[in-house]
Length: 267
Image 1 (spheres, rainbow, N blue to C red):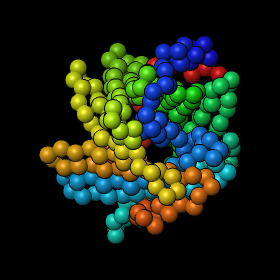
Image 2: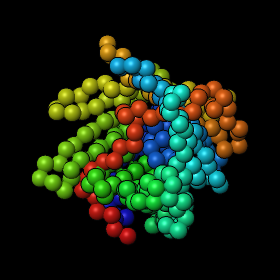
Image 3: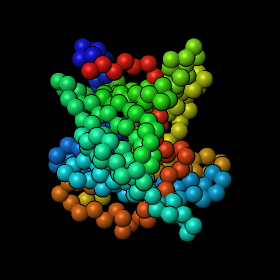
Image 4: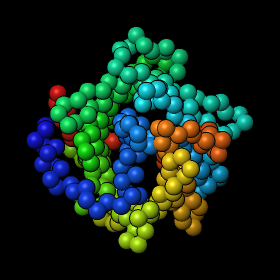
């Protein structure tokens, strides 16, 4: 396993990545791995108006550098705020059984950090996901959906490769890649490759704020637009994001991807 990851690292160079692409990599599973004195994911805001205006936001809370709860707000008068809880390195006895809860186990093997997430809904196990992170490489495998995802740099390009229905006779592949703007270190573009065609999907901006930075994703067409904003704050700063934005609501396109794939996770 370690040799396999080392070989991948030789192929996936981290040099020349711009500030925007580096920040996107940090956003990928960044809530699980916070480095001391680095900015962490504090909150997000989403709005989609392809068919109608659909807003939502969320706020993440941490204790000692680890996520402990996620508050999601549909931002509608008739909808209630939903809170999910996270427990680290505990067993099922920690579950309250009355909401969405996740038990996360963190382990290390050499330079690799391994996160095992068991997701529960009202006490019932709904999904298990294993994530491995080493330097500029992240992989995730979700058992219930037989899904696999790899995120890594190759030279100055950030790749996100997904395989759906991997253990079937007809696995489905999806590739997105993000490249930096040649004239602007704080701007980059995400492209999607599907059915042999490559199309621009989103324009992304890295924006400095008083206490950290923001990643702004914008997808737009003649049918409308889809905006996502991810706010990061420094660990020694007091966040003001919640004062700037209402709490969060998740658009279907912004939901966590349960990706399919053929990766053998061995201990």
